[in-house]
Length: 126
Image (cartoon, rainbow, N blue to C red; front, side):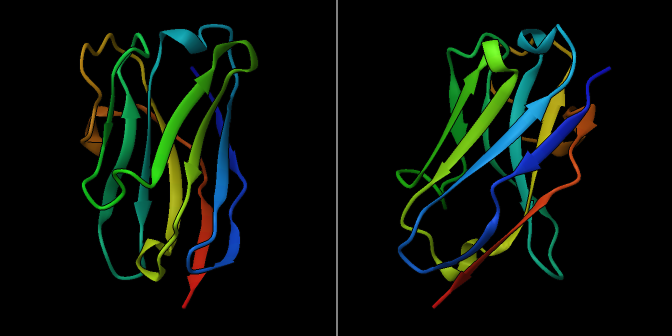
C-alpha cells in the first residue's frame, strides 16, 4: 500500500507558475504508475498528466500540453507537476494518484488508479 501527500498549491495570478509535489510512502514507489488529476467546483475529476509504469512515457490532457510537465524522482519517492502559464480555468483541486500495476502506457482514467492523495487547491486569478 502507498500513501500520497500533495503540496505546493496556492493562489497565483494568470500567467504565473506553481510546482506541485506528491510525496509517496513505501519502498516500492518506482513500481507504481503515477498520475495527476484535477477537479473544479461542480465538475467531474479530469485527467491532467501521467507517467507510464517505467516512467519512459508521459501523457497530458490537451488543455495543459505545452504548459504542464510531470516528472518523478524515485530516490525521493516524489512526483512533481510543474505548471506554467497558468490560466483561470486551471483553478481546481489537484490530486496525485498511484496505480499498482505495470502500465505500458500512461493511465488517463481515474478508476484505473488505486491510491489517491487528499488534494491541493490551485487558484488562478485573472
